[in-house]
Length: 174
Image 1 (cartoon, rainbow, N blue to C red):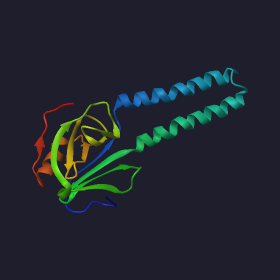
Image 2: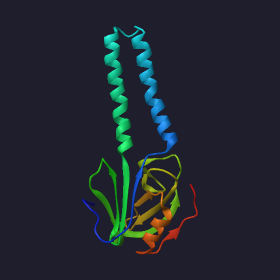
Image 3: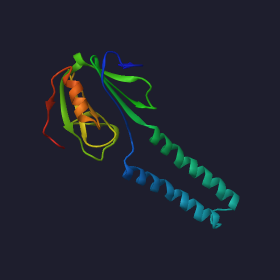
Image 4: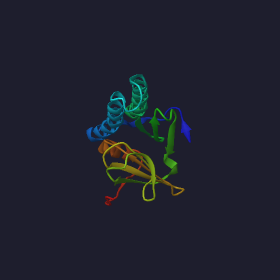
């Protein structure tokens, strides 16, 4: 179910962005390589006229810049209320996905492999929503579906969940 805004008393809120230095270094280096290649080959006269090289350079520049800007603006918003858990990936989804408390069978604090970012599916963790770090909370639903939400504020999230329901701790660390 999707809703436009969270319902109930807000107990926890977090907005996570991709801001790890090493990730941005990798992104910028991978974006600079095509630009340097087009500039060197194009302006050296190996790819036609200099006018054609300038056009190719601008095309490659925009082709690299647009995904980088979109990646910069992307964030994971998580809101926990007394009625459920709400999360969304902005700017891709304007409406929140909702997990209501009656749907939840179990809640566990679990670690997740460090280098897997974004939204993806895992057999052990179900739907994974992760921006950074390895800490998070896994919700196991009554229909046996799983949702793992990463957080940079684990203690605050734990405290908020414990206001609504008991929390179990998983000792597995991938």
